[in-house]
Image (cartoon, rainbow, N blue to C red):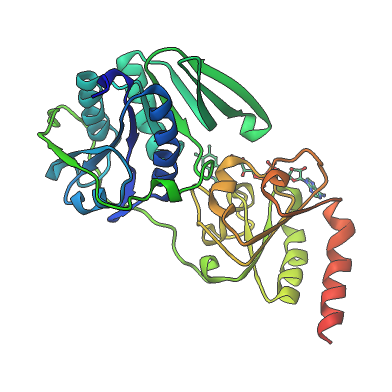
Length: 326
Ligand SMILES: Cc1cc2nc3c(=O)[nH]c(=O)nc-3n(C[C@H](O)[C@H](O)[C@H](O)COP(=O)(O)OP(=O)(O)OC[C@H]3O[C@@H](n4cnc5c(N)ncnc54)[C@H](O)[C@@H]3O)c2cc1C
């Protein structure tokens, strides 16, 4: 058996009885890293009554910690458990999703154990025995490389790797670990899960979304996008700044703190493509981006891109589409 010190651990994120999709992406990539380090790939599942989720995880083993006090996620309780496990087993790398939950846990764990923390990673490899991560900076405008020769904690951007390799073909061995930490000392408890109101329209059900970002500039301009959406038989949605301004309701927000959408067409108007936005729409069947900045990161995930001032395009495009219908 390989020494535990070379093992790669993947934190299994789950909510409402479902494993978050990016966990499978981490397991797929984690397998490559574990093989390169000659270690094992271990999934770490923490919660209450979520043992069946372990069966879907492609790993050499699953460490399962079960306790009623872990039923609702709080950073304090789940980090206390992760910390106790990592302290005992000393894996080489611990991978988390770069999500609200993963960022919470990874930062607390790295600080508590004085391990280096590499964040917003979009690629990961082993080079000469070192863990090398390519990471996004400045909302995805810059990429940097960070490397660690010893134990490390890493957060990985969802959508960076394919998920298929992380889905188990047969159930992995599961080790039920007795509760390794005391939760009494943790001064935080979950009261309830707040989810965005579906509101007037459920944008997750729309096949065509016309998304507006800060580039729309003024609330008065939103009807231009609504007209275009009408001509396409779609719905208007938005990036967070537009919602923060109160120009559209929260129910229309796409991204990390909004809705996850997967329409047939996602037309992004004046949206830069920050990771928090991309997280909610990158799996759309077809992405068309309109942006005046040729270097906007949205073009990295778009199938088609148009570098143009949207106001030179919108009225003519709407007119052409309306004309086609007439
Ligand atoms: C914890 C956390 C959660 C977050 N959650 C979300 C979330 O759920 N959803 C979300 O969207 N963001 C979220 N954000 C914010 C996110 O980081 C970005 O700030 C946001 O997505 C940027 O929105 P934007 O692209 O509209 O604006 P900007 O980044 O300002 O981009 C505006 C774009 O418009 C272009 N533009 C300007 N004028 C024109 C024109 N006339 N024609 C064409 N293009 C033009 C510019 O070139 C630019 O690329 C979150 C951030 C944090 C920290």
